[in-house]
Figure 1 (spheres, rainbow, N blue to C red):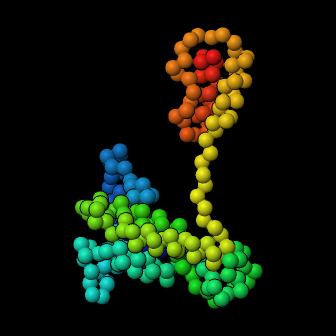
Figure 2 (figure 1 turned 90 degrees about the horizontal axis):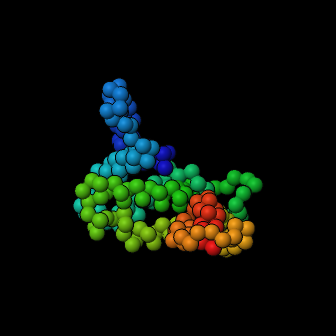
Figure 3 (figure 1 turned 90 degrees about the vertical axis):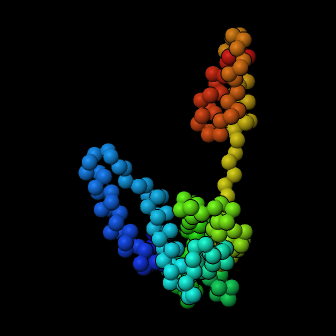
Length: 218
């Protein structure tokens, strides 16, 4: 959302650009006294400043305390004018075409992934700046429904489905490896408490932990 944040709040991006280097520069000159903020923290601060600038420019002006999920959705729609993702209309001949062969007049909008990540950062920034989790407008049900509709609509318009990748647990592989190693390494000690790397979720950790555990448990 770099391009989005800088374009959405004109008054928010320039002050950040000036303050960031000067603020971190003093700390790095002293050595390890202050570490520069991470890329995520810097982006979160820019997004937060952009949203605050949006509230100031709102007509009528809107305070953060009175901000609701409906205002957050309004903000997301406002950001569409700075988007770079082509979203085809249902009447467009390229509707549902992942790789259109020619340009069309359909609008550019913010991609669903960018909006989803933006809401995550703003939701965290809201609570870091004194907001209560139960009144967080970025976590409102209406915002979640809107993001889901944007995801489904863009998936159909662009012909690119958004599907979460399911992590497969290597349980069958682990059991097969255990049996194979057991037949090779015959009788061992009786300490079977350390066996089975069942708690590991990463494939690399499982394959490393399975072989020794199988030899000791059999």
